[in-house]
Length: 204
Length: 130
Image (cartoon, rainbow over all chains, first blue to last red; front, side, top):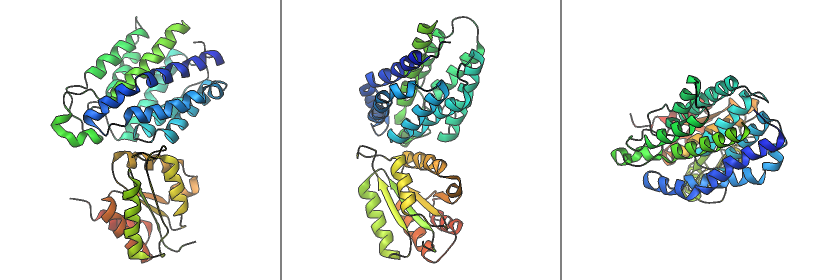
């Protein structure tokens, strides 16, 4: 995997620009079953990440991911700040500067565990974990078609949150009425997986 | 430095946080270090880790600080803020699982009696629905 400064800068831009391009959609999803601020919050966080991308990309991959995590924690504002912040902070803490596929899998596993602890949640509760956990499982399964396969898994998993009933977060207040809408956090996670997969394919 | 436990109020709404702090102040005057924050980093409804860290600093007491929150994001952001505190402070800041207004008033009143951080939290949490 090429993780030089130019590649790192492309990775940051890929993630941030994907989130920013879908900010309105994330807000619409959150208006249906939450407080309607997911897109705005993510936009605030990733605009700052994008603005700092040059400085962030100068650092080795682990420090860069930690930097992204800190920025999200400090800027996003909603629960998604600490949740995505924890994801990136844990990746930064766990990944070596030039990770192998196995090390990337181990780091993602640690990051998903940290998100579970931060959100006191598990898969099946209509959250971002309903995308992250299947993506992690598929990555661990290995075999042909990686990493492209992960993007398909992520989108199918986000779709699969539509019939779920929310148990965590503001959407849980709606009870049965949370059924029938895609979880905004699942959608934003699938978008990030998309961006990372596209970046990995461009590296290959 | 106060001899009493400090109280921090974290709401999505600055109006709710300020109003709650006013109600605590009415009970305890200046006996209890008290700080509030509310709103996201752009001033809209939401919570903000830097603002919570700042509020903990303003309400700091060597006896510790109890935090009262309203909804999920306030809790998650407060837990994140607690983890980011310098090590010597982190063990002395607790989140109370209690309704924000009633919890803050009860916690503040308990704190004004010179109670420990654990006692302050327990009193606030007695309000928790069974």
